[in-house]
Image (tube, rainbow over all chains, first blue to last red; front, top):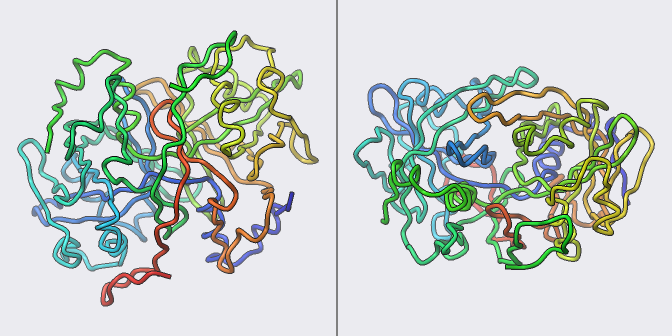
Length: 211
Length: 211
């Protein structure tokens, strides 16, 4: 095995370390988060550090970078209490990545990228019409991560919209490859996924079995 | 779009909702977390809710389920302050999934699954010899998520071990597909990944460009 020590990693320049450490933790859930500010101006930004917290209640979290680097999404969520999360497909990946550019406040990433904003009852924030998986979220808690000035934003899943129904298995599993949802890696890599296997609930007295 | 309302989702039985909500947030970083208890007995468990928090300092978080459901990993981390995170490849996916069985405390998942424990200087916790990506972690903070009794466990990356060097790009990006690292979906689905594109740093006045 090739060893990269803690001191070696600390000595790297920040861009190299950023690419390496962002890749190290593995493939990531990547989505577009849609918000509005108090004046109902829309904002859209790509986020890859999204994590499932629990299903009952249905909670999803994401990491928001320090406010100086990424102010709009979190500020809007705190102003309105709601946001949308929208999956990214191959047809929209360039537009999705482009939302990471530092546009001025009040500039709509929808208008700049050509992605289409859609509004639905019960949610002030815009959905992305091109996304095959869209869901609305209600803010639950913002946990400051004091060690690097980021924020762990916890939300409750509200309404879910899927472009197709046949991707939902009899047991509720959503086969996201059928919806074209992408994964990401590092700061800028996008990936499609191929199913390898699903496994049955594991028991101590029996070997793992595929479903 | 097919609409699943908040009240529909809440009315599902817990297993169906668990599969649906676990899939909804997208493809996940899946890894084996290795720990020891105070008596140096090893434990190994598969975790899929792992999230990159930041690169400077290098921080990675994961969600630990309520202690009644999943006591060993978190208790061991709190006792020793350290743990390892090890990627999963296709050759070891059945063994990795099997670590999710509820073995009694003191039973080693290494012995039960045939995965090989390896120890290295500077880390009390075992690495998984079969993993092509292995890294050691130092506990930074355990944040209780009061809304569902889970825990957000924040750690600092210490030492990193890769089986090959040629997967590391000149800019530090690790092409994990060359190392066979898998992603997961839901509670029990495992996926390989295919690179689609990397994109250059996005700027407001220029369209997205692939690297």
